[in-house]
Image (cartoon, rainbow, N blue to C red; front, side):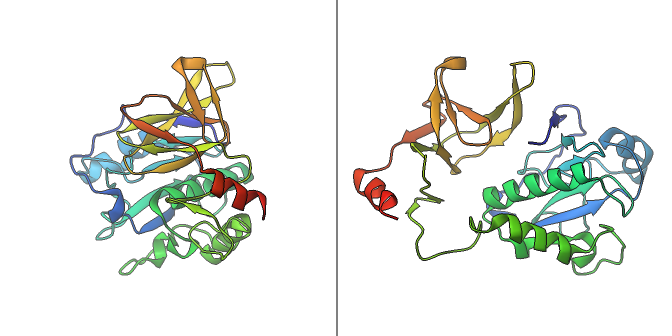
Length: 253
């Protein structure tokens, strides 16, 4: 799992918002530099352009660390005339990227696809958007989408299969004990190397997540997979268990 560096409270704030349902595309960018991060780009370029906010929601550094810059409800300045409907992810580099960066991009892109209800065909490079003339993102996006499709089989995020057992917005999976529906904005956490919780991002109302186990730590938390946790706050999340009929159908597959 990628290391997340949460800098959302340190970036230039966005004064505009959007609904998650407005996001219809995920854009991959490159920085066209061999190094740098949000603060480098802000001080050396964006601020000089008169921008009031940054260009990307996430920036992936050469070691694979992900700078989480903005929540999805805040559009960023990635591509002119396409920002309201696009979630922007930048990979630091100039046409050459590390294996750690590619793993982090795949992880973050797949998570964004799941959260926004998008498919692989909705993942585009900067230069694939109408009205753009640029070499960004410095990589063949067909190869990127091919890798994403390979990872998705047989899960098929954004697709459909005839033998899926759907439970609301999610598919019931073996080992799943329940699901949580987000009622109010709440943090998603992961276990850090020092035993302390690290915030991954903010979950938004209406999102649903599979639950694989429960623990009493931190006033009670639901495990939603990949070492990530949602705290048991009844005003913010609703927990449900699958019916006996659903479990019987799952066990008969």
